[in-house]
Image 1 (cartoon, helix red, strand yellow):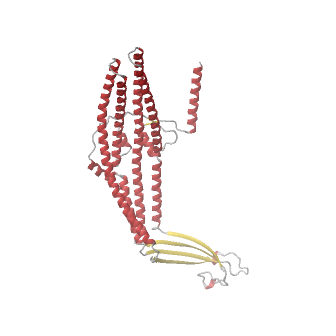
Image 2 (cartoon, rainbow, N blue to C red):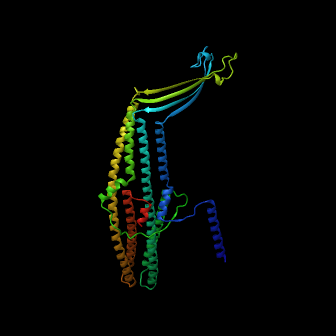
Image 3 (cartoon, one colour):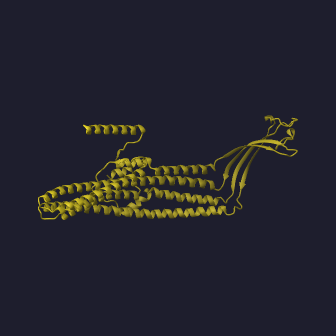
Length: 456
């Protein structure tokens, strides 16, 4: 009766905690598949949000550069008081000539670029190329997020595979322990055999604790990549593939395919174009610059007829002036400022070209390495699958021989350990084969959420 009361209290407490979590808006743990994890990461990853902000920042730079090609209008107002005996408002006609020491001025100025030999236009082109570069980098970052999420997800499932293998071994050892105790009680086995099995069970428990710690770390890393706040999600287990699939294309074909598909390579090509246009703009800064300038001014002053001289100005007393002209400027001496800008822009162009070449070489290396890893993973799957079959047969024979008194417990434990090891190697090889295919797709630039689902 007391046990039933305790169970009822615990059940009510669990309902109350669940209700509190739901009311507070805290998401309850959910079981997520690999595809759902990838979709969540693409929607909530901080790295992708930062990449989008970089695009917005570069768009702002382009808007700033574009403004140099459009009209610029400024308005202003001034109030000046002088201490001269006679102060004439500028542009006053003889009819309105007056003497005053306070003058109010208001006006507007218009500036419009007429010709600068393409300096501003090249700056704008460079800014737009950098926007394209940032967008391509964001696309590449998406691909990396997909791969990283899938890799950590599979790593977590590998821990589950190893835990399952360890649990199976523990059950087998516990069964063997019971049989050995019966044999020892009947005098057909020595008590030391019981101790050896118990020791092996303790080792299995220690291994399972280490695996559980590794799994928790892997899930935490996955949650950080996904941008998951709070308790890490519960992952849905799926068994590993058998590791057999059609071989991919040869390395040369994959490398040629990677060229137009890699977003980071497109980004680097845009960076080269941006650096080249920036260098042109820096060189054109030494050339003349022509601007259309137009100004309109309005002047007024307090009433000069007033004996006190402190009456406010009247609109009818205001006089106006205007000016339109072409302003041409030619840099003469700037203490090396433009020379430094040209040198910096030229060096940036060389850096961008070198980075693009290095990236092409890295792509070749990544594709060839991924292809080699995939072939190796397939061979490991085939080899370990056969070894698991053999290990099962060896363990079965050793158990029969031990039960018949024709073997010792050490051989049984060794066969049990060998089976566990081969099962673990098989599952790891199968997960590695799946991951190797993802790495190959990432190196070619052909990875997306649909590709992750299609490989399963």
